[in-house]
Length: 183
Image 1: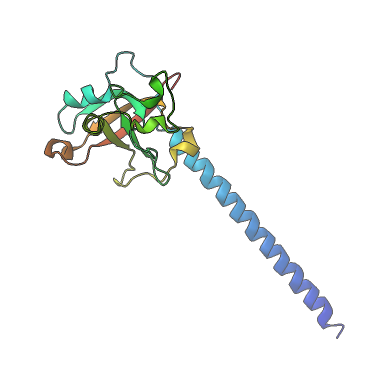
Image 2: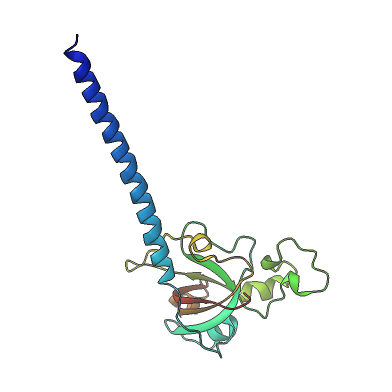
């Protein structure tokens, strides 16, 4: 039996070491993937924003399908404008009246612009989406990675999708983002 006890202890020690090493690698991989995600998210940010960018509604009205535009707006226009699963959000033109702009700010979710005319609101919303080289949406949560929030003012550089011309989904393929001061 004495021969087996050292063998069992050695086996237990090797197993414990392997489990700890595996846990360490998993933790390192998790931390590494978070760093990669944060680096990828920060790469979406524009270094500088032009001073004279129009609102998103005006920019889209004056652009042809496939053209790149630079425009401003607020993250909102719906109850949950930020995607939790990938790098995208609803951008609404500031010509829309947001519920926190009045004296009687009684709305707990002013970013959804529920006080605005529904037709005007629908015409003023665009989905901004960041995609990878393969054309698939980037799997990044912009709230967690960049601190984006509802009602925040931003500037985007984005390409107007071809579906826009056919009155399809109002999707903009984002190329860059700038978080505006106070927004």
